[in-house]
Image 1 (tube, rainbow, N blue to C red):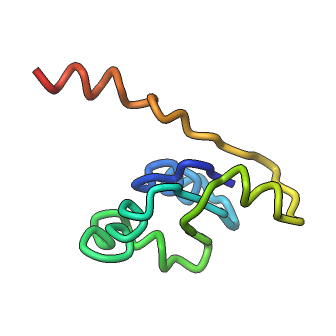
Image 2: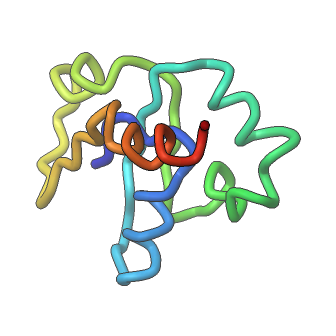
Length: 90
């Protein structure tokens, strides 16, 4: 499970390393809409990949309501790209 799936980098990494299935949850509805629309090809069509259940919502709420057991829960830190962004913005 990936909480904060955003543009799908972590989803693609999981698929690259052979995961059987990924539940991916992204809070931002605009991000989800872009991945399902204009950026679908760029993001590797992860929202239509049969190995991926990519949904919009709060990841912690999804997890609390789920009966599934997970081998790994990857909570992507929202500031994980902050240093790279700061280095390239000015």
